[in-house]
Image (cartoon, rainbow, N blue to C red; front, side, top):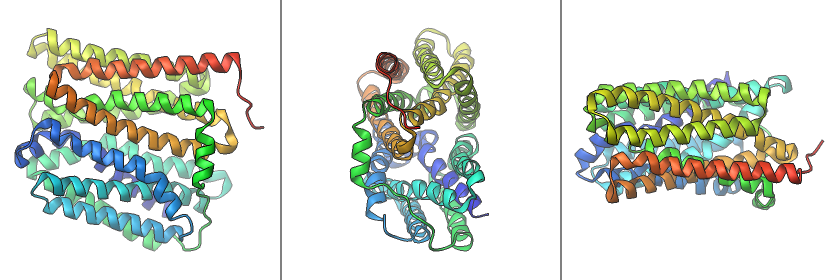
Length: 390
């Protein structure tokens, strides 16, 4: 039962991380700031998560896991309450940074606790249940949070997330025992794994993929509004994206087992890059009546392809050296959030200099660069295979 509360915490955190994309227009209007400036709430959150996760993991290495989860969720909830009270850009930005720090401490701790709570034959399922909280957040949490925010004001979304976090915290206090074993890697161990050439190529692939996706996703509501989408339509578009992402995640894992991680990852990146470039082309060259349906179809294809890449990428990282895969995957998660931050910043620059119809081809170019790194990594592995631990 304890693992369920960890999954609920992951659901709240996943909703928080991605829901700003759907609320961007209403926050921008309420705080009277530009869409590009509003997008920096995503950048700040993702950057704080990327930098905070390894630092906080090391800092709280010797603390009881239950206490760490309690602290992380309490901070996350308090930051959401601060967001509710925010009336200015700096205060809301500070609340987003604090949310990210709570999330950065909670998520990897929750995964470690799930492993500790489960019997050896159920550990894979326990980890999958926790991570499914984030997947379900993209399907349910983000569209629901967008709908609530547009219907009752954007602060209502933070009330919803704070309430979810509070329920998860109560569950952790009730269902997670004290004295669980800790397996957090030291900073030195993390740096040693990061220097492995295969891991370096993989991290570069992940960061370019994340930059490409969030250059567009952060500001997706802006071109949608230009096509006449209202709040309900934007929620529907995010529901389509989240549903396709969940399908892509399952499909990517299945195809990686059958055809291999690198070929599956390559196909996913190629499909995602194509969909993003076509998204820009559709926004620039077709009439609004026809573009609405084309854009939704491309959003669906982008999400399936982009999230089919991710489980294949995870599988390929594990194969580099199974002995250090936990550390490598932790580094990959931090790198992913770094990419989200850079993507949010890049999208803001595109909006300021070019326009919303240019987001797709800029994001697609980054994904194409990710594909190039992946193919180069595959070529290096064929020429000089890495020594995999037995």
